[in-house]
Length: 320
Image 1 (cartoon, rainbow, N blue to C red):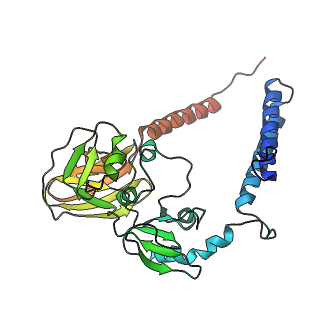
Image 2: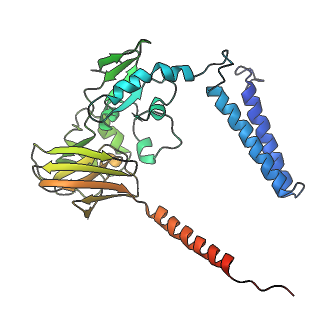
Image 3: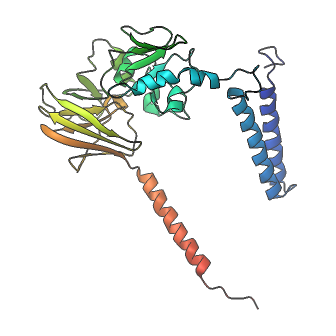
């Protein structure tokens, strides 16, 4: 790109290319047995560390290199915003104006960020229009950080000395809620259109792809998320009649649900959230991530370890 005049000359781009060429040469030499396996492996590790170091210093350069742009100072400039968000009552999930904060504020301070950087994204979330007001509302994104409001109805609740503001999104739906109306769609591609259609009340209606469970119409339900861990969520619900309790967290195969200790079917409202049908009365709902693949892998690893120990302890005959 630099030679073609498409952009400025960046030494890090050149280093990445040289590392890739050197790694290819090492692999080729190892396959042709022109170099021993151990020196080849050590050289590949060294190349990987060189490339990682180049990438790390691009975003987090040394303080002795003031001429290089660093995000470290920006982290310290938003610590008061993180403290304010932690002080809010209830569950906080926020988005940021990426032009103002080009890094993972949520990851750095241990807060839930909607539009942060991540290694992968599930397909069901990828199908949605993730940057719209209504999708943010669906996922309970109740705060935003920017220099000025950029969505309808945002309310300024905090401003730090650098001019960044914490904006509350009043239209955000609760993290846990109930619905008593369901709509069945045929294709996952229809979900985004349903969400963006302003005629659809997302606070009252949900979308499913399975056969519609039999719900009852009523009001005055009460639900609350009482415990949240990485792989387990606990909800208490007091239902006026049979309805669906929806948690605005991503659905993925491997999540299991229990109601009052009994297994319950877990639905995927809107194809991306998690929901269970709950009868009238007071109930305790547990959602736990227990994929069968992890269980199978753990069993296989245990068997392999036992066999390895048996093999190591087995008496061997000495060669004559």
